[in-house]
Image 1 (cartoon, rainbow, N blue to C red):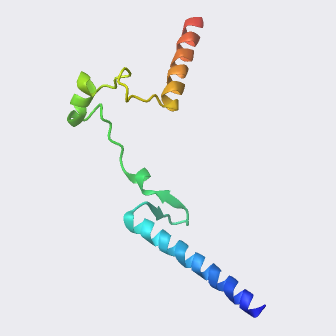
Image 2 (spheres, rainbow, N blue to C red; image 1 turned 30 degrees about the vertical axis):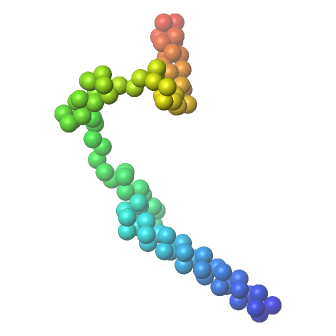
Length: 99
């Protein structure tokens, strides 16, 4: 019994230590920070969002046809989110026509 409890305690201590190392590593790379109330916030939420439409550095990617997606390309793969977005757009058009 004594050996089993020691093994369980040692295993638990190892798990806790591994979790603490993992948290420390994430904090070092800035994946998240601890808030004052103990909750964890993603560091990305604190980064101001840059709109590519307003940034002149991205103007070529928006206006140049060479950067556009080509659905006729054999390597083009349509994602589920793209299909859902297209379906939603069609529904919105139908709803707008009905009104």
